[in-house]
Image (cartoon, rainbow, N blue to C red):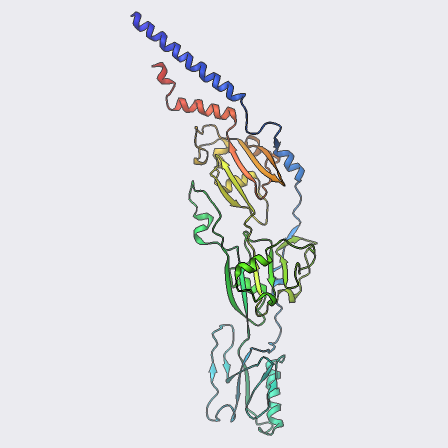
Length: 433
């Protein structure tokens, strides 16, 4: 009996020792040092108020300004191929003219034999001297041919049977270089839970396309190579004129035009006469005047879309580490950035658990968010309190490119979760057995 009493007293003494030790650790944790002292943290509300919520005064470019105005009648030019039939000269009287069905579904079938327009704008026909028809319509070209044969008295006036049709439109070879397209394996929706997202799926892709006449513009070049620039592209299009078509290496082109913009922000031509910059979005009253000549493409021209590889933010701490692209056309705050990074809103607000915040128990959610922002050579630590961020907009700081979002437990949350974890695994209950 005495042995049992001594044993029980020893257990109680041991329990008190454990409890005292644990309380000392807890008190020391509450008053311990932090990675950022109170004077180093900038409240999120001050950051937001300093930036001010400005109304959105930007507007997107009208896509019609990137397209040529189609003429009422097709104007012939060098590179066009005509279908010409002259009864008794280019074809036998008893044989009907040949019919040509073009590969382009938008073009009408053509009659006659192919006659290309030379580089000097002339065509060659039997028994007459070359005729210059570049700059004419089909009707004008047919009249020119009829008059030429009538003047040479080869065909009697009124008995001519001449057919002139457009067999093939001239085309322009355009090179399109895009850095905003992604591979299917790198798409965000293919990322599974608990995976770290690193946006390395962007790659430079080049397309050599043939655009027919009056469709040789920026809008058609984009539609043939993936559509308008996405959020991973810079807010501008670059058109490199044929003076740079001697570049055979894509990387040389990217290095040549990838520098900062010049100082003349009101013009479309910046840095070089052969480089035209067309903004996709700008202030309503600051859009440059874009002429049709700026968006019309010729042989050897290059359309370059540069990627936004630096417009990203980073996550760390209790959030899965990763690098995520920022939207191009609108701002996101810290809560939206955490949701984009895979953070569970319910766990953040105190409901349920999430693998993103697991560790030393997650009964109490982590509410300490530190946004590390580089300002030149210095670094600013912005303190965001998730306990108030859901209801107070001033706590939701706008995320800037290069920001690092770190989610941590506050000291009381860490200690409380530690105690609850011990209870959860039955550590203290074993002491009273």
